[in-house]
Amino acid sequence: MNGIHLYESKHRDGNVILEHHHEQHQFLYALDGKGVITLDGHRMDFEQNSAVVIVPYCRHSIVSNTKLTVLVLAFDENLLDGAVREQLLHSEFGCSKLIKLSKMGDNELRQMLRKMLFQQSQGAALNELALPIYLSELLLVLVRNEAASQLHNVNTQRAERLRHYIDTHYFEIFGSHDIAVKLGVSARHINNIFKEQYAVTPLQYLTEVRMELAKKMLAETDKDISSVCFEVGFESLSTFYRTFRHSSGKSPNLYRKLHQMNDS
Image (cartoon, rainbow, N blue to C red; front, side, top):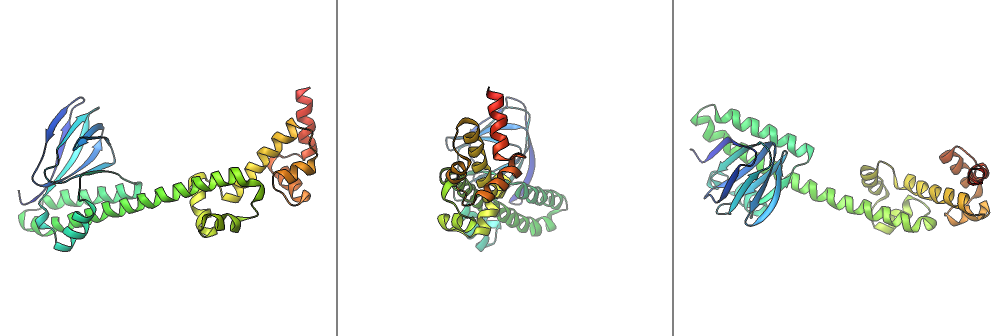
């Protein structure tokens, strides 16, 4: 072995690879199936489109819950360029970790692994030249996937926080600028992350919240329509009427009458 070796490892349903360790780094990619991997005592689900980086001397084991097919990439870190070794491998993968791949990250990784399998079959000279380059690119793909995942998590939290804010402050929000100021980010960014999470813009969701509350009040109380309009946060009765008709297909008066008839 020349220091970088990529091969297939098959595991039958219920197969157990007992705890062990290696002197080299290992990278595992689940092609198919499900299992559980334990890294230094920490159990994690290992399944299709997941990757694991295992540092030297890390105690690890695998139990397959189904037929599990894994690509194993074993490599000697000394074959990597010094900057790649320090800034990618040591800095980002100082300890063993399991990585959940995004769709884009998974596609990039699969292409890199295909390139490496092909290059590995081409003979020693090309192998020694190309595989360290491809390995560096693979590490870069993993680092970018981690960064994108962290950004996605931050955006998800912001979207959830914004939704909670709308749910509890629907009566005092005047527009997208008001929402953006409350969260300290731009209105465009707020729109993008909220729509990515909930498939509607914050203002569309605000309207939905207001309309659902207005329908409930019209159906279950005898409050004047102007009071309902005021309570759910509309400044203009005409805007409330127009928005309500667009949302329900009926005027507030007709909506109330129909619900009163159904309840009687």
